[in-house]
Every structure is written in structure tokens, then in C-alpha cells.
Image (cartoon, rainbow, N blue to C red; front, side, top):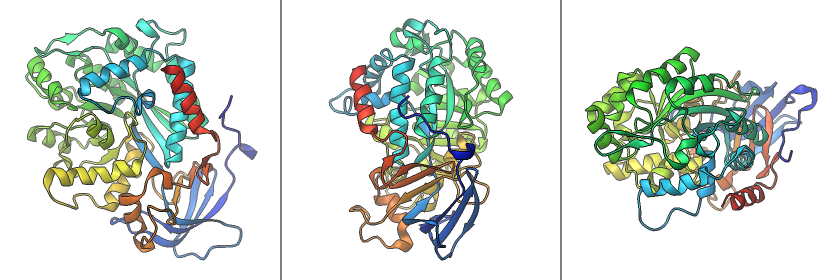
Amino acid sequence: MPGARAPAAGGGPAPRRVWCEWAWTGAGDGSPEYGVLVETAGGRITAVSPGAVAPAGAETLTGLTLPGLANAHSHAFHRALRGRTHTGGGSFWTWREAMYRVADRLDPDTYLRLARAAYAEMALAGVTCVGEFHYLHHAPGGTRYADPNAMGAALVRAAAEAGLRITLLDVCYLSGGLDPGGAHRPLEGAQRRFGDGDAARWADRAAGFTPVGDHALAGAAVHSVRAVPAAQLPDVVAYAADRHAPLHAHLSEQPAENAACLAAYGRTPARVLDDAGALTPRTSLVHATHLTDDDVGAVRLSGATVCLCPTTERDLADGLPRTGDLLPAPITLGTDQHAQLDLFEEARAVELHERLRTHRRGTLGTGALLRAATAHGHASLGWEDAGALRAGARADLVNIPLDGVRLAGADPARAADAVVFAASAADVRHVMADGRWTVRDGVHTLVPDTAHELDTVIKEIH
């Protein structure tokens, strides 16, 4: 199989000593430290020594080195829409019809190939872990495959072959939406692939899947209050709680969703989730764009995380979330529909969008944005042992030299500021995940011609 992961000699990644010219080791303001020696063994960091002289035999990384980045919200199959849906008029709701047409053309084989290439593109951008919001469960028309989790298995395999960790967030998706009067509509067309009938049957199917490989975890998701009637929500919440698993949900992405929810239940989507017990410290709320003051208070009180996907939120004209009001809720980042695949762009856009909303600079500084892209993102996906350069953490490194055209002239002592506010995914040169190099000199070690793989499978789909 092209792109398949080759086993390392001795069954695991070899011990390494990597000397980083500059590295962010967690300073609250994002300040990097000079001369950081990172030692790894068995896929873990065993020691981090700032102010070290580069020892003989150590690998040297110039520029800035960060912990691995976490893409906390992905729909892998949306990658096939890039460049095809962004111009002209319409709305989120008309864009959705183009998305459904792509969804209806996928099978386990094409999904594997598309996801592997999309995940390889993520690795090239510095991502070491992805949260896949997975609702493309069944064959066209809603017929179950012989293996009812064949599509989820394809995603888990794709991540392994691209060198990423994955949290497969199995999505409960039961309704075709809420009409303006508040009634839940049946699944129609491509949506039939998403549904299991009710939450109990969704839970039975999801429970029957155990991801293969130590690179994968299983979580749960509520697509939205549009897609899961309120009476079904407690079953999904209980499923996640019984497994201590991450629980994710789209929340208040569009005003029409809020209006229909109020018509159906007399409550906002946030309150519907809260009443079902879905707002917990294990919960991530994706977008959270149109929240009332009461909603904001409920999110903050619950300890839930808010996952922002700015490039999608502006592409689909969703609006600007109340980011500063939601703090100190943990913030994470996702690339969602992959209109762009660049966690640096998502990070700075969180702050820049808030500047547009409030006419004020500096709500989230470099350190906060880096934590959103690293430690907070990994924790929201159930990988609390990742996203930091510290002993015991997973050996994930992302290296960004400062000699490219976008970063030329940057002050090395403020390299993290430069990377967060000026770098792009194209500036990433080396990436290590769990102690193995997945990207060297800007080339993916497992999927070396990522562009060709993307081009081939996307043209087949269309």
C-alpha cells in the first residue's frame, strides 16, 4: 500500500537528541528559549534542557521549534471541495448542497485515499494529531456496509499511513435539520448515509468499533441540535461519559439554527445541550458563533472548550464569535472544511477576528494562541500527554526556520511572535510525531508526493 507506515527497527522509534536553536517550552507570553536540547526515547520526551550547547552527534534544528500542533476539528472529505465552493453568492445552506454531492460519491477505498492525502497535508503543516468529526458512516441510501464501521476504519488507517494520531469522533446524526417552525425533518438524499435511526442504534454501532493502533482514540459527537433531537441527546452524553471520552458538538454556527431551535424548544442550542448534561469539561463546542449572554455564562461555568475554525467561519459567512467574552474557556483550533490547511492562519485569525469584533488589540497573545494550537487542542481530543515540550510528553516537534521570505528579518528572541502572526504552513520544514520524523526538509516521509495523491483522488471524486 503506498504511503504505508514502515515499522521502525526494534519495534519503536530510536532514541534521539535534537538541539533546537530556539524552542517554545511553554512560557505564558510565548517567549522562546535559546539552545534547547530535547532528548527522546520510545516516542516520549525524556529530557528538555534549555541553554544547552549543541552536543556532538545531535540533530540540529535552526529557527523555532514548537510542540506538535493539534487540528481539533476536521471533516476530511471536505478537502475535495477546496477551490470549488468559495466564490459567488449563497450561504452556508447552499454550500452544504455541494458538500452533500461529494459525500455521496465516497466509499471506503476513496475515503481512505482522500483522508490519507489530507492528513499528509496536515502533517506538512505541522499537525501531529487530528480530531476527525466523522458522520459519513454508511453506503449511499443509508445501507450499512458489511462492516458497519468501514468508513471509520478507513479514517483510522489513513491517519496511521500519514503518521498522525487521530481521535475518531463518531457523530450521532439523526435528523435532516429543523424547519423554521421547529419540527425535525427526516434525513434526505446524501444525509441518509449519516444516520443510524436513533441514538441507541448509533451507540450500538459506535461501541462495536475499536480503533486499531496506538495512534488512535475513539470519542463521540453530537452533530448539532439540528441533527439530534433533544430527547436523544442524553443517550449520546451517557455514551461518552461511560467511556470518559471526548464529546464534541457543533454549536450555534448560524442564526437560522438558533431561530429554529427556539421555535422547537423555547431554548437556545447551548441551553438544550446543557439541559441534556452535554456541557462538561470533556466537551468541545465547535464554532459557538451566535451565543447569548446566558449561553456564554453557561459555557464558562461548565469548563467546556470552544473550538474555533476561523477560515471556515469567514468562508461560510458564519459571523464572529465572542471569543474574549468566552475566556477563560480553553480555546482550540480546527481547519474544519480545509478551505486552507494552516494552523498558524487559524491561530492568528482568532485574535484578528476578535480585533474586528471589539476594535481592540491583544485579547489573546502569542502564548495563548500557541496553547490553543498545541496543549489545549491535544487535551480536547483525549491526548493530555501531548502538546508540550516537557519530559514525559509525546515526542512531537515542529520546526520552522526563520530564513524564508515570510520570516526574514525576524528577531529570533521573538520568533514565536513572528511565526504566529506571519508564518504559513509552507514555512514548516521538519515534523516529528511520537519520536518519528514524518516531515523532513518539507517532504512527507510516508506520502512523499502528497500533491499528486490529492490531485488524483479528488479528480476521481468529481
